[in-house]
Image (cartoon, rainbow, N blue to C red; front, top):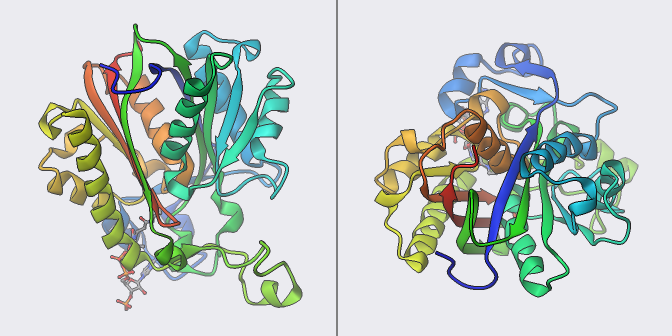
Length: 338
Ligand code: UT7
């Protein structure tokens, strides 16, 4: 089953979403929009919004605890922690270091963040696999995708603020060949920096440090050319899925499920159409959470497992697309976890 490198398996998953629900109807009082526009263009009906004093690491921790519990592991068993996010608690230190401390993981283990925007989780998965392949001193890697996107949304921009939400998802990736879980078969990652301007946050980094001018220009918020991104997202996700399936010699028709990035139900429908697969193979929760960027794939994955939607063994595909531009797919051999 294992294509190359050290065999690795996802042994546990977890997720967490803040309790505050923001419905489309609530947004009509904030920007010039309608429930009908949002539902028909995106499939989103509501999203979760973190409390003011809840940062990304606070969302990551319960998701991570749930994943460790499912894997039957305690804090002392984790040998490295990676957090995928574009909304870290602060620019530095990494959110992974904060999560390490909050979870009481062993002091001394490596902790770092991965920023590949909405593709972060599949990038992080390959990074975690790389650690396990690099040295026997790593046995269990905790990987979290967590976002507090509400903190960087422009609540006066109807073209973006209705699309995103907050949440977290986590997995534990372990060295191993046998048993239940998601055995990694093949990965495809890619990027296109030429199109970096299509989704970005202009200020707050070294290019445009915070200043009265940057604040006045609302440059500390997410900006997106949605129409262009839509087209590129569909093309990139389909091409990435086809590459990884070909590499593993797996036909799309053999897949038992596909967990796509949850940005827009129309993107998921288009990907299904191009791959000639029924939409029923694509568990989705975009109606409940909107786009949670790096959290979206692990959140959808965990919910699908816990809802019993992934009860068949066989090839399972995770696909993502996001700012960078970036994209990626991970093909698993899935043995139901419970
Ligand atoms: O996760 C990272 C990757 N991101 C994505 O995958 C997002 C990809 N893009 C999308 O999902 C879609 O392009 C959007 C949902 C962002 C937009 O849907 P669209 O069908 O591409 O709409 P559009 O941008 O072409 O806008 C159509 C119209 C415009 O009005 P005009 O110019 O036709 O008069 C917009 O001003 O809809 C208007 N509009 C809205 N109307 C009501 C834009 N946002 C809203 C809104 N409510 N919230």
